[in-house]
Image (cartoon, rainbow, N blue to C red; front, side, top):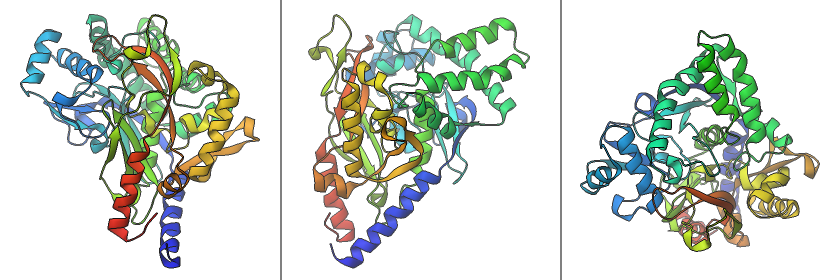
Length: 424
C-alpha cells in the first residue's frame, strides 16, 4: 500500500470512527412495523442475516415464519402456514435492507411493534421488535410457534407496545447510549447480559407509566413483563447499535465493518467503503458454550441473528471483560472474557469514549472493526450468542461463543482491491 492510499484509508476510517463515537441513539417510540419500517408491506416478512430464499432457510427461521403467518391471521395453523409459505405467498427480505435488526430467527411481520430508535447526531433511524423473553421460554425468535408464543405476540401488540409508546411520549426520549454506558459499569456487556440495562430502563419508564391513565392491572402486567425479563434491553441495544453503525456506512475507502449478521445458513458482513454488498461464508457453530440439560451439540443450529451488530458498535463479546457473569453463562471464565476483549483491540481502530470497562481501569471498549487488521492479523471478530435447536418449533437450547468466518473478510478484501486498487 503506497503512502497516498494509506492516507486515504486513514482519513476515511477516522471519519467512520468519529461518526460511531459521536452517535447518540435514543428511543422515541414503539410503532407497528408497517407504519415505520421502510418498504414494509402486508406480504413482506423480514429475516435476520444476508439474503436467503425460503427453500434454503434453516429450521428455526422457517418455524418463526410459520408462527408469524398464524400471528398475522394469514394461516389458521402452523401446518397451513408452511403450505402457504411453500407456495410463495410471502416475500422475504433481510432486516438490514430496511434499517432494521432482529435477534436470532429475526422474523419481523407487518403487525409487530418495533422500537423506533433515532440517532440524534445524524438523524437516521433504526428499528427492532420487542424482546419476548429468554432462557427456556419458547419464543418466535428461536423458531417456536405454538399457541403460547402467538398469544404472547398478540398481547405485546395490543397491550405492551401502546403502554411503552405512551411512556416514551411522556418522557420525550430515552437515551440508550447513556443507559448502555452505565450498564457496562454495572456488569453487562449489552448483548447476552442485559440485566443492569433492563433494570435502568425499568426504573426510567416506571414513573411515566404510574402517571399515565392506564389502570393498575395494565401497569402491573407491563412492568411485570419488563422486570421479569432480564434480556428485555437486548433489542434496544441492537437498534441503538444499528442506528450507530448505519451512520458510519458507505464512506468511500473506509475499511470499517458496519454489519455482521447470520441467517443460520450464511454469515455475512458489510464494509463501509464497499456499500451494500454482502460478503458471506457458511454460518459457524459455537466454538464453546453451554447447552441446556437434555441437549447435545447435534441438536444445535449454526448461529443466526442480527444481534452481532453489537460487536461492531463496541459492546457484546468485545466488552466481555466488563461482565464476569456473562462468561459463566456462555460456558467460560472471567479471565477468558478479559483475554477476549484484549484480543479484539488488535483488530479495531479505537477505544470507545463512553463505553468503558472497570476491570481494565476504565479503558474504552474495542470499537470499529477494521477489515485490513482482521485480514493482516488473521484474528476473526468473536461474538457471543444464544443457541437454538435446529428443528422448528423447539426454541433456545443454550448459549455460547462463535467466531466470524475469516472467508467473509478475505472476500471483502479482494473486492476492496478491485474497487480501490488497494491490497489490504
